[in-house]
Image (cartoon, rainbow, N blue to C red; front, side, top):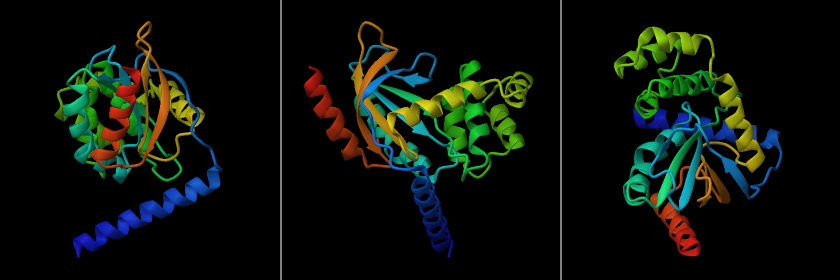
Length: 219
């Protein structure tokens, strides 16, 4: 019965995303240079390729890819210095009412050097993302509670979240998770020419084929 309930929730999520996409028009991916200065990342600063994810903490597909696929990408490509992995916020506020505050919480945690710990605990507790839940998660990962609460309640990073959402829109990234893959600018590693859009919670092999092909081309 629980499996049937989970499946029904997933189907409802798909329906909402399809309806949201239908209202949003037919934006297509546009190859362009993206600046990631200040965004949380994993890997070498000047890795040959940059993989950027636009994500939503209330999105079950984002949770799935964070749990099942990205660890493999990180082990094979990020930890070996071939790819820099960057997170961008893209809360789908029309269907996920707590996602924007969750993005704010992640950036508040980044201020204290614990973005990835907050990232992990929020995805592990996707149904507990109220304001009080976020403060509980912050305490659980050892953040300064007062500093975090001030940052979250004052919406310190609202402009940063909106900027990430704007970047997604300009790229033509639709829905979440959305990934863009490109070549890092070695003269300014904060920038990368994004050349390919990887849409949705794809399996590892899909990422592998795209990354291998672009690494070969870059070399």
